[in-house]
Amino acid sequence: MKPASSVHIVLLVILCVIMVHGQIINKSNGRLNNNIMSIACRKNPDFGQVTYESARMCLFWSNDTKTFADAKADCEARGARLGVFKGADKMALLTSQLSIWSRDIWIGLDDIQNEGTFVWHDGTVLDKKDYYPLYFDIKNPNDFENNQDCVQLWIGTNMMDDDNCYVAKHYVCEKVR
Image (cartoon, rainbow, N blue to C red; front, side):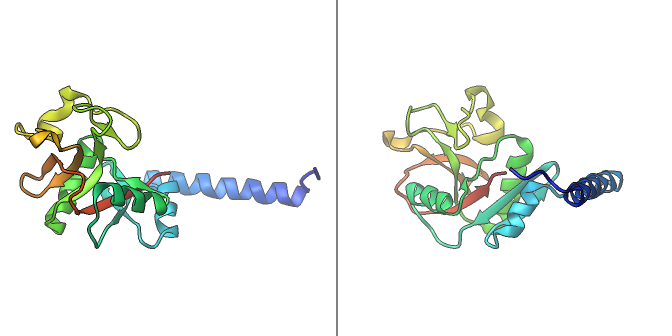
């Protein structure tokens, strides 16, 4: 391997200083910093960065409807996953978009493997103590007729709801860092 020339080292140091200085300027102005997420959004024209309070996500909102499995596959083909909306800030971001969309949306949460154990598509389990009132209303999840394993954001309550995975719905993909 050829050692780096002093010119390359100087350029690398300058680049690092510019990046650090940019972060300091952004922090001092109270603005959100550009990071890998915003770069990922800019590099993928179908995705847009959405910010709500402290939640920032790089999201693609479908224009068509698909079953849960097909929506998941479409997100994966885009180098993404069905959107994971853990926490109050991300749920607020999701519900704010629902008011714009006015339609049910598949998200990255299901209990396909084990009924009653909801797993986010980042691999974490949604603890049952966190169901209410942040994610589900008191009537959901209900696994109606033992056949509801996929989670939507439901326009009926502006909260999550389990539904039949074979129903075609709009969906949201999330580009991860």
